[in-house]
Amino acid sequence: MVSKKLRGLSFDIVVTKEKTKSGFVFVAEEITTGIVSEGDTYEEAIENLKEALQIHLEKDPEFRKMLIEEKRKEQTAFPMITRIFL
Image (cartoon, rainbow, N blue to C red):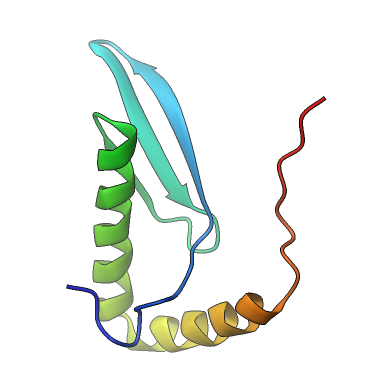
């Protein structure tokens, strides 16, 4: 269960599909923290990343406080990451 302090925060992630010896794995990385997780499916990689983020933020209160403040500022700022197609 997500703690009240973390609930509602948004995180920017990148998910890639990488080839392994036995097939493929999906790798999810959160841009701000650099926390990475993986899974056999796209959805599993994201769920594993959510869990890793929560564990990391709960174990480091000072980092959590700083990140929460930054994320709250970002929520009122204009989005800076955009995907375009040519």
